[in-house]
Length: 301
Image 1: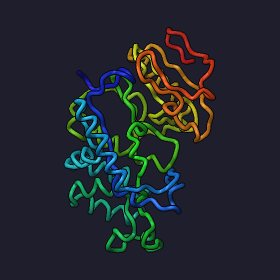
Image 2: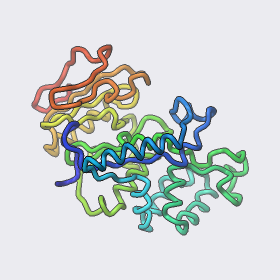
Image 3: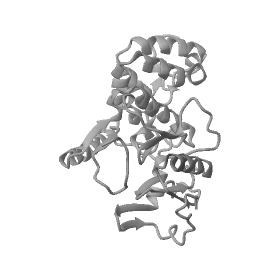
Image 4: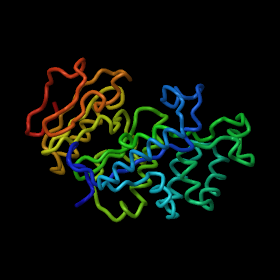
């Protein structure tokens, strides 16, 4: 079967996850809010709970792929390292001198180490020599490259909708590099590089303006229908773009645009309504009420 997601409640065959790692040890009470966390994590406990969850999925026949391992395997390709340097370790992100040093390092270092620091972030203390003004003006624990603790939530930076995928331009600056890492995996990992699949929206080489989306708002509910929440993290501009792409390809016949309160308390559609079976959902009654939806002809409601 081709890669894709055709239902929220169908049989799960393959899944991509990310194990808590270096980036979660970087969380402190002073930076947690900036990194969109309410508190620091008990990292060892988080790792053990993550491993237990993955074991449960494997026992049910699910093939579990680790995003960090897939990034490592993608970085075996020199073109992938160049792409990462152009997009994540660029002059505008880390500084002019630091970008030059980063390219030298990324071109020769072990791929697993490069992947670990791309996700886990880089502090001044991690760098052993002067790499320019950003480095000189930082204290030992300052982040030269911010960590990505939200990469734990793999549903958000990209989402598969039927036979294609979005590479999500996310709203919060702290999360934007996650999307670039997913794009690197899709571009260069052998599992995806050999496949042909449409990209409904997204890509680092375009300016997406106010078209923002996170995968927690996107639910392909089956039978050619998709439900997308519009709240704090996903905008109508993105919903319309995705809908047009799906309709043009004939991959969906109906997109339901769900208006959500623009509050972090609700954040994503999957926190408000969750499909458990074809005829069973859990919902948050203060939000879910009467809905104005589109008709099956392909208009957005």
